[in-house]
Image (cartoon, rainbow, N blue to C red; front, side, top):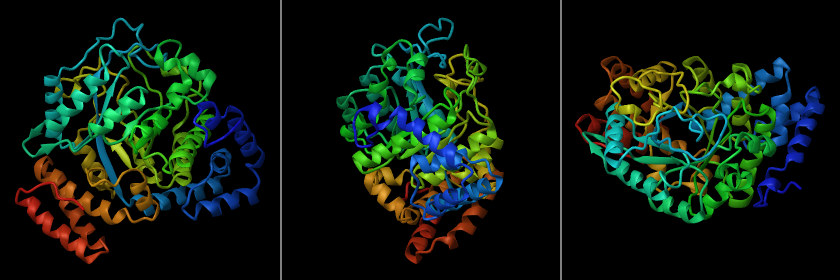
Length: 471
């Protein structure tokens, strides 16, 4: 029985409700009156239900699709402006006890080199990331209670925050680790993490259990209910995601939005982020073995419909995708991307690329400087801002500011100041030239005179060597 306020996975992600929603969408996908009513509601910028968004995704009318894409761009601009937040994943260990059939870390894979970084090696990885210009990391590990216990994660977070190299500093550590206990989530909160991220992989319970045949991850309910435990443990920023290609995309899309609705109904705050990965080739994993792969066109429509459905949520795309797809996705709703990512353990310190311990193949292999320059040429403002997290604007406090469009008063000025830091400390001459011109054009767009003066004063201070200004 579907109940978004239930704490039981099979009730807030009710299989029959998903099927009924898809059937309703199919029945009405050519009903112009119903579709128009949904589009009119979406234009209020307050979001859509999983059924309404599923209808838009099901509709294949070119005129409707054009309206969806236009609306997605408008909503993205209204909530996030032209800012794009940058981050990098940091893989600490690929030891894993699970048997996930789509991941090369599965325990039966005996030829992948198993690596676990020491704290000294982690510090070197962080130094290498700081030398690129990164300020925000997402740490990743396989699930292994012996090799990757919570104590190892906590020690690693402490190490990451402690490394200060030249003008570099990691100011926000997001954590993507396996579902765990309320007590462990409380420890992560106390360690000062940013967002807790956990991909569902698939919300289809039968498929989920087949794809995770062995190991603790086999427990569908424990995994799906992880965000509730995280929030009970005090983590108020959580990130959702599915691995598109494992199950039928329309099922995943509806269930993903149901999960967002559940968090809003129970905790008063939806997901801080939603990620959009597609299954890719990796070591002994062939994506062609999964028969639910999706085209670029469908992938981009999913992103556009998600942006219309959850206007307030940050949306992430990784270097799994190439530059062309990422450029289109940025227009339609993506607000965060990774840059210069290495998905192998210890990958940032390797003098040459060795992906033998990688979780998946990277499609966008450009340097961070190249990605920053590319973003600016597209008209975006690259941002390394972590101010909201450090100023306590998290959870419902962030969402209330975001839903009222007030967060732009902080984010845009902070983005310009953190971009200026990157330009001064890490950028190539061409990128620095393009970036300074961009900042010059963006300053007059800050509507508040006092904030504009604050930014101009601190941009001058950054040129003189001072760092870390924020609103």
